[in-house]
Image 1 (cartoon, rainbow, N blue to C red):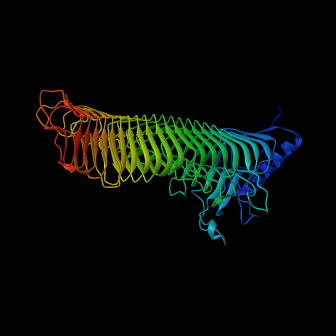
Image 2 (cartoon, rainbow, N blue to C red):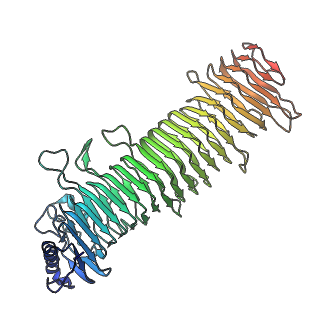
Length: 588
């Protein structure tokens, strides 16, 4: 392949800051000449080159058509010590390298330095909305196709190190939309941009891989201050720009002020295999995969993986969060929006007041096969949410509770393994099914609370749970008329407490098929007790002591009315109210 080594003297290219206009013009003439002659590659030797990166002929968009304007069908290879410095200016926008509506461009190697620390932020003319000066770019990919940016070291831009955006706008009649397509950013060092290190606003088929992305937004930066921001422009449910099919893989993120990656509003975004010290978010994005990332902090701040909600005009996020390792954050995974699957993640060493797996104002969320350990805060929490499932998670060591459900509807806790926690599951003002869980609190080093508890505002179905050696109530709840309580087929073994199942208040509850064994070191205890209930059905339970100490009573309903105590297998005498119906109970 023919390569042309740029002749800096021939084109009047200088290393003098006072010659920036001439240097910029020289680069532009040299690139056009190389393409015209037919050189597919141009090599830029080492040197410091000052670039006039502002298009002074465009008052509204000085970042467009600015700086070094890269033609199509060219590969630009820069010496590792070829450094392009943006001349300090007062413009709200600039581009050191501008890649407009061209095709087949590669930029490889070299350094680009913005001028954010020398920038004059006082000037913006009549454009009040531009006063933030956040449109200064190292490389501006604007409606181009087939672009590779490889091994470039970019830092200190007033806006972004790299911008990937579209020409024109979607869904309007007066312009044609031409997104940047097939863009690859790899093996680059991107540091200290004042806003984001990379923004993708109007790009399709964008690959961002094996880069070091650091310190976006430091030193009084400009929002949003993300390592990578995937964010199109729209109003309501109308998109004017769309980021689509963006793959972010095997990058290292460190020191970015707000988040490492945010898919604020993109489509088909994959964030896979990255190392991060800050949050990754699916935002309002649609069809996002966050997989196999390692997220580690040392200060127990921030939430590792987050979301914001559902984009206007859509039913759900369709987000998948899987196989991530999270350590040392405040909280683990916080789900907002709808249609989100969270599976196979490992979460450890969070702050004492953090939550490992959480929803807020979310719908149709599945948490399955996750592991939480060495975390003393809450492990699972659904708040103001509906259609949420916690299934087959391993939850070990909470000082608060393993599962908390508040103000939520149709929540299922199924087949979770809870160990060494102060409390198992707490249900408040919610409709919840607690099914087939192992709630083993025996190894908790101090006094425990309840294995499963619910309040007066809840409807509960508690079935097939295994609760070994409870020292406090295994299942406790309060209820009122109109609420449903069904406690069925739970296995409570070697109880040390006085009352394994205790329900206060409400009507027509069902407590059936439970197997309760006592192994106390003193006489006393009631296997099942109700208080102030009306019409409870207590049937086919097994209650007995495996030690030599007797119970006060296996079933106590004398403080309730109209209980139906039927077909239970019991050791000891029933304590019934005169309004109760008692039949077919079998002493053992």
